[in-house]
Image 1 (cartoon, rainbow, N blue to C red):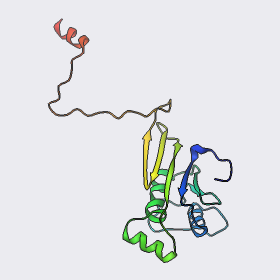
Image 2 (tube, rainbow, N blue to C red; image 1 turned 90 degrees about the vertical axis):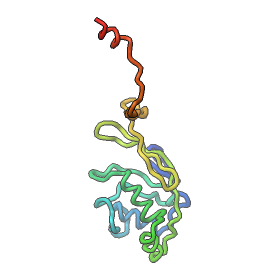
Image 3 (spheres, rainbow, N blue to C red; image 1 turned 180 degrees about the vertical axis):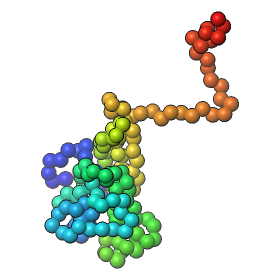
Image 4 (tube, rainbow, N blue to C red; image 1 turned 135 degrees about the vertical axis):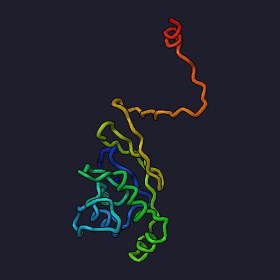
Length: 160
């Protein structure tokens, strides 16, 4: 990352993208000097992920109607680190290596709560956050036949 960038909006790419990959990923975002790109199965019109000029990172830029989580998973699955046969054949015909890993945490604005995108290797997951940016604990479902301790205040109400 040769320039100053907000670290909360960037995921690093290892090994760095090659020039042809930079042009392709930038084309999917609709930016850069090259033509706008379209890829089979892309999740929307334009990607919110733009590569840096050296190819060492992807910067998230808010784009209306484009979910950055879905797009990053798509980029990994189809271009950067495909594992399935068809995407591998597509990138091999273009001469792309497809051996990249991503790493980073990106703070995303959500409709109800902010979210934290966590990318490690080929995996991308999302952590829901509260207003104080702490992880929201998921509601735990009770198991069938589970013994639940009774609250003293509830027991006193039933005795009256």
